[in-house]
Length: 152
Image (cartoon, rainbow, N blue to C red):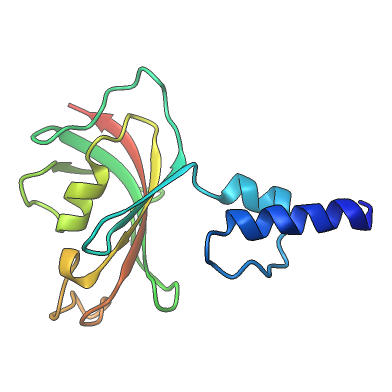
């Protein structure tokens, strides 16, 4: 690349970083592929990022549906994985009835089969002041990468 085109890429990178640190060793083209197409931030702190779109005509997850997902759960603070079902059977739950943490009920709602989302969940919509299972400390922010496998 020429210096001119690198300068242009870093300007675009700064604009698209939307307040995050724009200085990055990752090439701009790579960052653009990794950046979500759409980000929604809720008043309570929940952040839902669209990572990949599934089938445009795929079945959409609605409250009351039985959904199957693959996921990786990490602590936002240090990126440590505390749970994952990759390589195992999909995790099934009924959406919107409190079988999972509130951040999942809200974050999975509206996904289509094949969609991938990143859910950044504040403590109040996760495990709160108690934490969970010794792996999730009290008041922890959680990051889940979730893929919707099936809806019934």
